Length: 489
Ligand code: C2O
Ligand code: CU
Figure 1 (cartoon, rainbow, N blue to C red):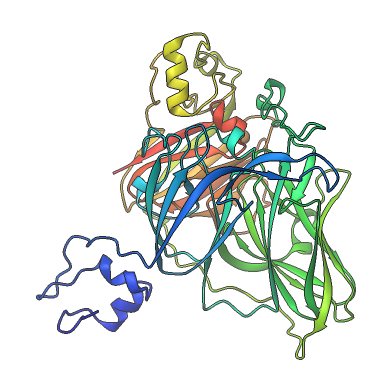
Figure 2 (cartoon, protein in one colour):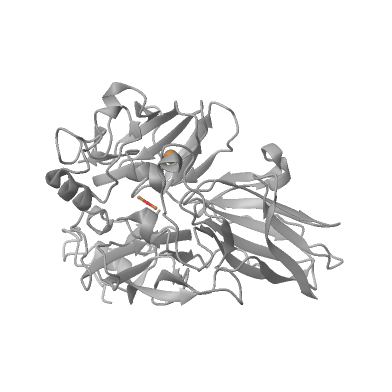
């Protein structure tokens, strides 16, 4: 690429992410002035086809289940370098409308995959091209944004890892996707949502899996450091992730939702666990015992601990490192706390009339068409600030929860007045988690934050242009009202 005499310094070049495609964003003119962004220049191109496949989820001698996956690979993992410009074509090979949403990626709004708000629903056989700048390293994932309880409930999700060459070298790395399934004895799916679940903590699956298996046997060298990327891809379940090991073992939380934080020992967190709701991810640095004894990972939330992985020693590291192995600090737009506008949103159960009135009559054909186009359920159990995603009288999108200004800083308080925890996600941004009224969260960056009953969590971010949804990631809650949007201009 010729940059001679263009006035584009080496520093500006590196600042553009040192990506081959980075230059395309800042097209230099002869006078050295940047003009309007040049066309997106993909460095990587791929196709993701949603389809049906069979998998033995109940056990080796048990009936098959017909699940959904991208490209016939359950929880397919894509790895791309930081700075990549990804052209991803979503092809809908299932027999219902769908879209592709890349969760946690900061991108132009038009590629966000939210039907009605950012694009039309992709019909069976249809396709949609997403142009994604992958500037933030970390552990991300992708999933449909329509009939999520049904499509993600059947397994439609994949992992997107943006690799950073500056990361410390780990002695082993493993990706663990946690997801439960709602299966009958014959392998078929049970109803993904039941009113008693949707209106409360959610409808749980009883078949617990990690990467589609009951548990994993993983390897890492004795005395070495293993990087585990753990994703909660369940529709409903909140998990308390912890680890145990013998002499010399230790475990540190080194990233949340892909973004590095000051490493915290898991044992130093309240109850020695990291509580993780649907859509949340963590990177954990595990130091293996020098004597080669095993390490186990579990979800300690239920009385009946779900031990989903065991790390056993294979080989031994020559020079053990003490750890933790910290990741480079995130380079995200830093909110200006002095100038920030403060907003507050309350998560509510449909107990007051204002929220109840939003329910749509299920037998009304107009309501039915609206429900289909907005990809929601016909019932409203939840609201944010007394607004629900579809509304009974307006019969179209509710007004935005807030109008914001591009580039301005916001501090948003999320208050939970319900009796259930909610993992709240904002599209297209990474936010700084400033505080929890229960004092339980370390300072970190995230795209989804779990808000406990009675808790208020404060997050801050620099607004990026577009119409971005803000919703609970317990999929049934989102589909029964706990979703709103911000208009940022
Ligand atoms: Cu995982 Cu609306 O997103
Ligand atoms: Cu919720």
